[in-house]
Amino acid sequence: MIATIDTLHDMEASLKSAVIDLLYRLADDAIIIGHRGSEWTGFAPILEEDIAFSSMAQDDMGHAQTFYQMLFELGEPDPDTNVFARKLDQWTCAGMVSISSQRDWAMSLVRKYFYDVAASIRLDALAEGALVPLAQLARKLRSEKKYHLMHGTMWIPRLGTGTRESHQLMQSAVDTLYPHALGMFEPTSADLLLEQAGVCPREDELRKRWQAEVENVLCGATLKVDADMSPVFGGRAGKHPKDLMALLDDMQLVYNLDPHAKW
Image (tube, rainbow, N blue to C red; front, side, top):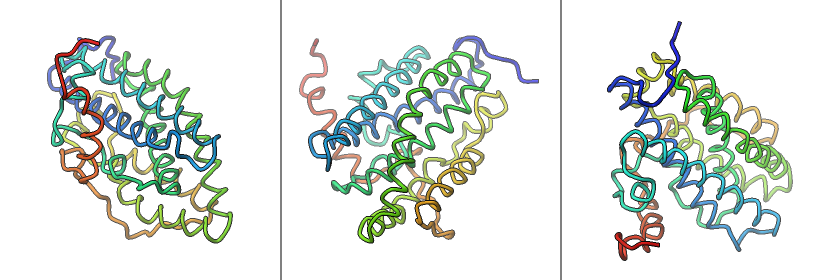
């Protein structure tokens, strides 16, 4: 039977390092997908979606803040320093959240849905995990994430089975993004320790759960997945699409003008 870990300070050094690795992946994915979502504020095709994407982006950034705060409690830099001072190769976000949608609405919808399913599956797993502070946080965050998931499961079938044009745009987005989405489950050296300690399952197990849920919805939307698609890895090891550099330049601009400024 796996014992619960009641506080962040009850972990041995090796498990602490594995949890830090996990928290960086969670936080970096959330802050970058939040930034990508915020790029639609004032530009979405209808006002309802302008509001929805802005609200979801705020939620994702808020989730990132809580993960960065937990990292700070584990001895890592404070949240502001973590977000605004790290260099490109220090980020651990998956490539899918980094690439620019080029203001392609179908790309943004599909990417957000792919991310939300992955985030929901992770939060559900963490909520049942042995690390009590993280389990408590996961239970809180998943109550917000379920509304994001509802948004995707409404729009994916609606556009997949809509007009010929909407179907083609959605299928193109799936074809482009699915290999990058698989990259959200890139294995890391932390996986085995996290599984053994009962903190969360391994990435390959989470991927299987994600694929089952996503492909069921895509099938209902008449959207197909090429079974031969290979995952695009690298993000967890600091190897990113060039689009992330441009995003970080924008996101870190004000901070880098004067890192020591007090607001």
